[in-house]
Image (cartoon, rainbow, N blue to C red; front, side, top):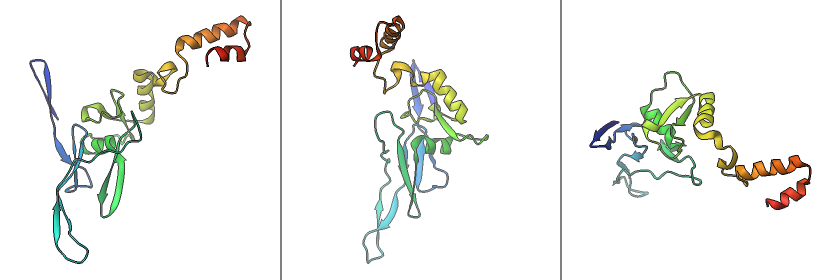
Length: 173
């Protein structure tokens, strides 16, 4: 991918490349997009005629907000489903140390641009989560029910010895 800066405007040139082991079937782009090639498919059950199906950008599948997106690539009638960031990394990013995981440098798991991805070990991935993202601790965790201030207030109330657990709980439900 090439980037150019012109009068403080960053321009990124998209590059397309065949996905390894899916050459002639699918391509990946440096902007994190997967597309299929044009292909001929049978037009009916009994005749030998075919029709041209135009290639298209594949719509990623996701389970919810801030979830990794996946696409399935079909080869020889078998669907090979992987997360989009894995297809992009396999296509564009060398992995000479054979690291097993891919890290999103900016922490946004839906940002699958090549420049945002890197191969990492499990421990490097965990370290990035803690250093860069705070690992979702405290109120930054999506499942948190209390703010950090409320937790500190609860601790102070408990330390005084004037409140039972149930009394404190009622105040913060």
